[in-house]
Length: 233
Length: 311
Image (cartoon, chains in turn blue, purple):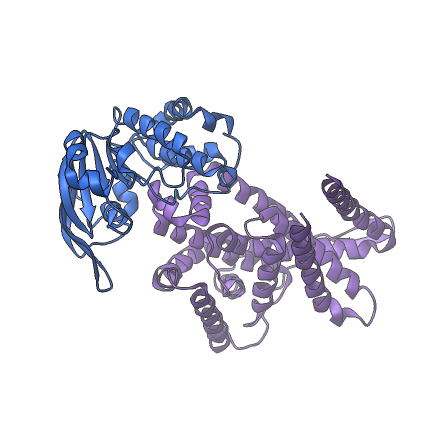
């Protein structure tokens, strides 16, 4: 469904993505790597928030590279950004509605999608009338995920969903991500390799802007480099 | 808890004052109240389109008053050549100024949006000067005004006799406020505008065409202020620098109300209009009206920041 081919990007002289290629089918895929490896730049390049120097990104056979971000989103890709990017002075409900209101295909299913969000994250129903800016960090993260799912995307991209969450919430979060995989394909950038590997079927390890390793999750779990560098074993 | 209570008492006092002052004025100097509501309505209605772009989507436009001045000239020449009454000329003015706003946005504002805000200030300040000088070269600095008999309509209430026409500005301010609030709450473009104002990147990520939203909102704002220029012309004469005080006053009203607070702009406009009218009512002190305008502004902003510190 999503194919990234030989992507290169620079910030000034720093070469932050080096010939990165990856594929996402209908399964859940993880991109793992330390801080500064290029995970966020990669997902930003996919949705058009940064323009890579060379390479290509195709989604359902159509190139995304020349499209502005809102058109990428309308074509069925949703991003849950690291910084969440909510509308702080709108209610939780209005934030959720905004996830579907501007996607022509999702608009008519808005009430059903809203119901589904409240079932997935019951706390959002409790907070529905509260302003998004007054939520705790964990609740904001859930709201950001629910808002992205409002558009019923074919591909959901999550950028460091576990960042800043307490450990018990992280486990719960990855559990939910696993369930989301039944509705959309998932591409998840994560540092928390140990827990997120359980939520995805396949993974890529990215280091210094390069794909260092790839394979099914259980294979990565057994890999010596992964065990030493990411699992501390 | 005590803090909460004092705050409430403070607010109650404010409410009483805002109700009490007009009542006292009505008995003591009724003309001040009438004049203040009319003048304040004009300030408020002109400030509202600026509040839409500054407070909602976050574009600073220091050429706001100049667009109003051009709107007034537009209506004047529509009257001379096409025989249109300024109030009728508001309709072609909306169309013409929506177009002018769109062109201005595409050619200039769009390019300054990503730059620091200072660039927007300089750019639109430059546009204001271009507008003023353009009017000066085209139509000289001679004030122009069509003769309209209906603006002198008046009524008598007991011993009180006053002009009723200028209440059109008061009414226009309230109508425009209601329309803008409905637009922002109920329409998709209005909600998209709120989203863009709160988080442009978040807006992109939910599929909003941010650039198109800026374009449409800016055009709507210019179309409104152009049409209001025509309404301005019914009571006032137009000359090249007629618009610049309104840029200043609109900007101040928005600062006073707080960014994004549209009803506050209207109440602030009435408040300042009444304060100005009160000062002008003392013979020989009319020149102090502007001083009072800005003194009230400074007091309100200081009061707000004081409250924020204690809260």
